[in-house]
Length: 83
Image 1 (cartoon, rainbow, N blue to C red):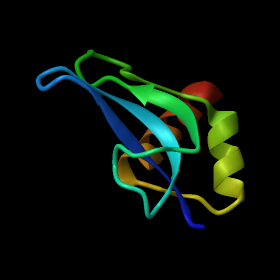
Image 2 (image 1 turned 180 degrees about the vertical axis):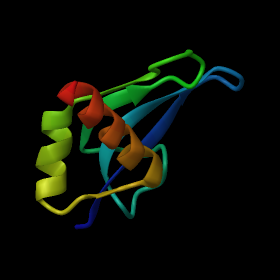
Image 3 (image 1 turned 30 degrees about the vertical axis):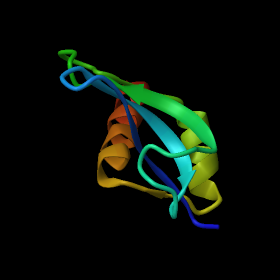
């Protein structure tokens, strides 16, 4: 089973928000996921995401592939945590 870290869309037509999840890569975008590791709300200004770096590191250590967006959130969260 190939696991990927990606966004799972929730919300209504004009008010989206996303869960950052670990999911089997063969599942559909909004399908069943293994574990939620964070959230992303594009409607907010400033820091509009939250991510649990411990869970993300756990999944990356076992070979999960993050999407480009999730990878950028992880990088931003690591630099913010370092400061």
